[in-house]
Image 1: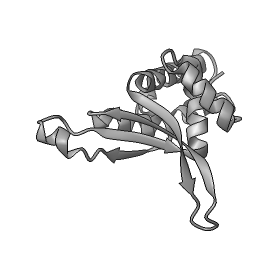
Image 2: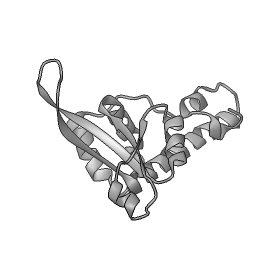
Image 3: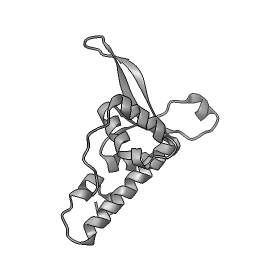
Image 4: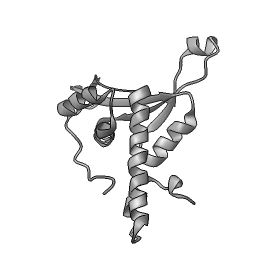
Length: 148
């Protein structure tokens, strides 16, 4: 990790340097989260589904978020910055038969989905109302701010 761009946000906040360097690191983190929120606003989705537990057979709601991109590098960067999430290739044979690019999904579920949505919610424009309703239903993650 040679530059601030390569440093995950959590490490940026924990830097103890004095002066403007910490403020700059904090600003980069806010910009990073805002950029990720923009990706979600444009190409993301969030919702709930009913899932049956394997141990006791009870059904419960599962929160799931995803961002779809044809450029996997962008999603790899999101995972690097957040420190969580998984990337899955989309299996759409019709799209590939039409000559479309392969697409990838960045997926976060359960508690990490709540954390993710809580962090990006202030930066959302298009999907803010939907995300706010989901967080009201599932509870907001009590996270410390990533930045000062």
